[in-house]
Amino acid sequence: MRLGVLDVGSNTVHLLLLDVYPGSRPEPYASHKMPLQLVQHQDAAGDITDAGRDALTDFVIEARDFAADAGAEDLLAFATSAIREAGNGEDVLDHVQSRSGVTLTELAGDQEAAITFFAVRRWFGWGAGAILDLDIGGGSFEMALGTNALPTVATSVPLGAGRLTRAFVAGDVATPREMKALRKHVRGALRPAVEKVQAAGEPTFVAGTSKTFRSLARICGAAPYDMGPYVRRTLHVEDLRLWGRRMEAMTVAERAELPGVSPTRAAQILAGAVVAEAAMDAYGIESLHICPWALREGLILRRLDQLNSNNDVRTVNPKHLVGTA
Image 1 (cartoon, rainbow, N blue to C red):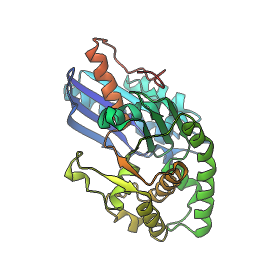
Image 2 (cartoon, one colour):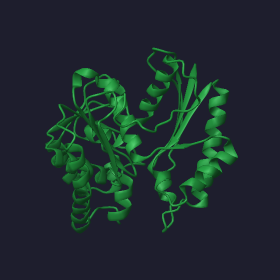
Image 3 (spheres, helix red, strand yellow):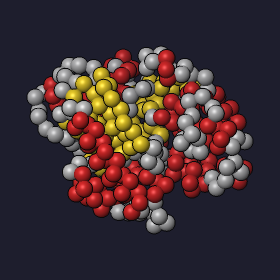
Image 4 (cartoon, rainbow, N blue to C red):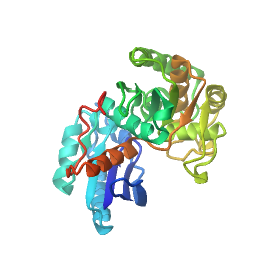
């Protein structure tokens, strides 16, 4: 069957079409995306503006038609922190549904962390042991730890790279005062979440997921993405520390010239580096492994498991994922 996955994130709205069947590896068929940064469409009260709501609705309709024309038989559609943390998020979802007929499932932060962990476990396998996964998005930062298919503990904090950039960095080049305030805020917000995760045990394997971690690893010397997903990629905290300080002195345009950094993410990659470094320091991590699979793949794998068990439902129910197999 051909499956469509529509991902409404903080930085991008992305439709991925895959050809799947029970027991198969998901094979990408086509991709359609829009660099819609919903967090840039929030007003002072934290609500998504009418312009942002309408742009999202238009793309969902476009994605729905794209999927139908390509012969998609099923569509998983979900939204993450940009919607769940907006004051009018439910109204935006209702508007999208009424205009497009597509129901976007809003994922809570711990659900997002758990589903991403599920994908990481599938990628690295049981031999990885107790996995700690770190995932930096545009609006939030997820962490999950466990020894099973799904994590023992999963949590989310509002430390997304885009969110922090808007809150702490006003100009094209970050000032020392801004960087000091940013680091202090990140360390303070991380502390209770890290303690919660550490209470669940010690990891034997640490993974980093998301575009931010992939870009940071590339900046620090990891293999380019066009070499394929099976090339081993690691991120070392000492390299990250060095490049983080270098990026502090760069303009946004200069950061966009770094390997693995797109123009749409160049402004926020510095804040992403601060979060990654602070998290690695908090856990005492010297290096981590980059996983090419994340939230989207986790949802796809859950859907394939449903096909394997002949549970013919239209959407993945992300509830009650933490601590279950």
